[in-house]
Image 1 (tube, rainbow, N blue to C red):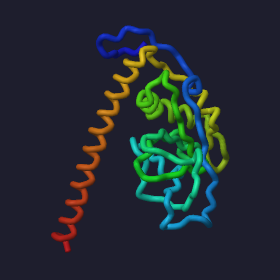
Image 2 (image 1 turned 135 degrees about the vertical axis):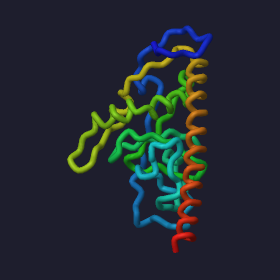
Image 3 (image 1 turned 90 degrees about the horizontal axis):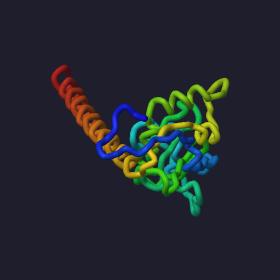
Image 4 (image 1 turned 60 degrees about the vertical axis):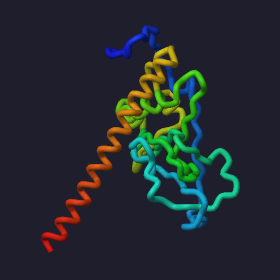
Length: 198
C-alpha cells in the first residue's frame, strides 16, 4: 500500500506484471537506403525516445510507406527504448510516425488506465530495473520479455488509477511549461550577450 492516497479510495492494491494487462510490439528494420526527406512517416528510433513526456519529433529520418500496418503510431502511444539508454519511456506526438527496430510500443487492455501505466513506466524504478536486466557488450539491450515481466503495484479500483495518472500528467504539463520558459529565457540571454559583447 502506498504511504499517500487520494481521499475516498480504500480498495486494495495488488502486485502485477506489466504483461498481465499489456502487450508489446517491436519495430521494423526500415532500410536506410529508402529514407527520403520528403517521406510521409518519421522513423521513430531510440534517439527519439528521450524519457521526456513526448518523443523528440524534430530529428530523424523520413520514409515513404504505403501500408505501415502494425508499425504505424498514433498520438500518445507509449514507446520504450530497448537498446542503448534502455528503459526510457516517452509518448508519441501527433507527427505521422512508424516504429523502428529496438523501440517498443506498449498497449493496455481496458482493465488498467493508460496514463497510470505511463506514469509507472516513467518512474526511475522502471528504467533502473531495465538497466539492471540489460545485456550486451558494446550496447545495453533488453527484450520484450524483460519489459512485460516488470512488476508494479496497482490499485484495483480503476478510478483511483485514473486519479493518480491525471495528477502526475498535470505535473508533467507544468514541468514542460517551465522548461519551455527556461529555454526561452536562455535564448533571450544568448541573443543579448551576442549583441552586447560583440
